[in-house]
Image (tube, rainbow, N blue to C red):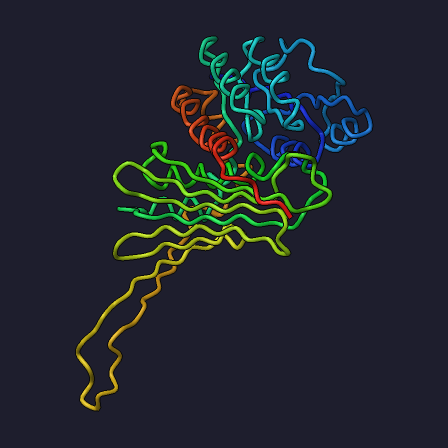
Length: 326
């Protein structure tokens, strides 16, 4: 897509939708032309804030060039198909759908119709993640932890809500190939959780060549934790995704003691690399989507990167050991 700035419609005026609206309205590369939400109060409020139009339903999309879908996950499947069947490129919030079969259908329709599709796996664009992954050489083990306090508004379990982010990062850190082995445990603890929605998901992933990843997601933590540790044989790369910083650790052995015998025999050297970007992840993600639209990013490769993490999450849910219940 070249020439005029693409005209973007946003579906969903909730918490995440309002964030997307701000970033879309601030972008110098596109125009936010419509907010679509059946809730008139929510939709009009966001539309007026960013000086654009509101509509209660999707309708015809002939006047827009692409769509960002930030509605609740349970509505993704039907809404995504409406967009793709009108041949409009789509950026859909993660997960694509809250089930693998529906997600695969959306991806298949996108491929069959030749319409670009991108999933909002936002942590790909976290400055700490971008920097950490750029430093990786020969990774052997990834540990990712994503713990949060309980949020009643989240109706799905943590596997689709949280785990999918770090599974995606682990796959990217370990070469971009899907794991060959998936093991997982689920825990159900909070009395206010929807029946069948897990509060904790723990998984171990095995990769061809021996790489391992351990990924932990919880929504019953009392503080937010967003950490990524990538281990190589001779160094460790640690990223805090909340503070958005990266530290490299190297263990050094030194057998040469000082004359008084008090020399250090071992030490850990720490390096703090400069972040490759300090930009807001949502803005970086939007630029990626716009790059897909104008053809500077391969749309097929972008589409192909969506399902690996979704397939792993589905396996965790399907193959988990006997659920742990309070």
